[in-house]
Length: 170
Image (tube, rainbow, N blue to C red; front, side, top):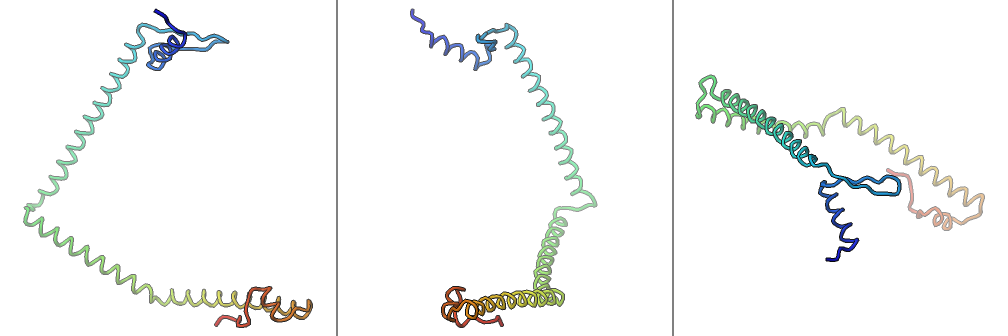
């Protein structure tokens, strides 16, 4: 039987990957070892971890059952039977619809709020002043180009990328 060095390396790597053998590189050498009780210790550790998970799951189940019992108890109090409960749920649904309709109406009325309209008018005035200021600047540039630099009106319009209809916003 021929064993090639590559097959030994592959077997070693497989054992390392399966945590059956440990490996350390010390200096220029690789050392491999295995302790007989390591696998038993890992299985015992995993077993304890699973038992803890089972215990926490049981606690959550007990808590969920108590919450369910509390929820059912709340529905049975005050002598509310199925018919009364259905009436109350229907009433709740109607009130939710009314509330939604009132909120929609409030949104419509907010659009006509005098305070909001006043704020919009202030903002419009501010934006208009800014647009006029920029238009003044563009006309000042056009004037400079025609008077100081000797450009014709047509050339100045082309350079500023505007046309002869350019004017202040209304």
